[in-house]
Amino acid sequence: MLDPQQIQAWIAHELPCEHLAVAGDGQHFEAIIVSGEFAGLSRVARQQKVNAILKARFASGELHALSMKTLTPDEWNAQNG
Image 1 (spheres, rainbow, N blue to C red):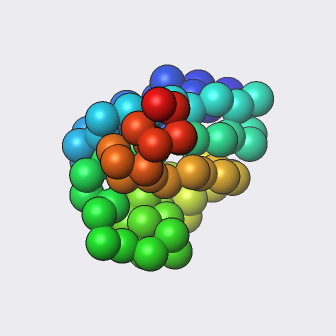
Image 2: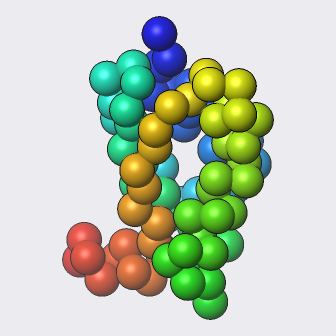
């Protein structure tokens, strides 16, 4: 069974993150990803960037589903004061 910590490590290895949290039940996962790399990108482009990191995991079936909230550090700070 896939561990949320493993998904977190895959993302962190490829994307500098100010905050990264992944939770899930072994098949379906949710991620909050905060990265300066998202500045100037649309929500779709941000998700595409993360999906590209995990492409091989999705293709192999190792990772089935990941919903994500992608934020810039400024957006994160505005939400979390």
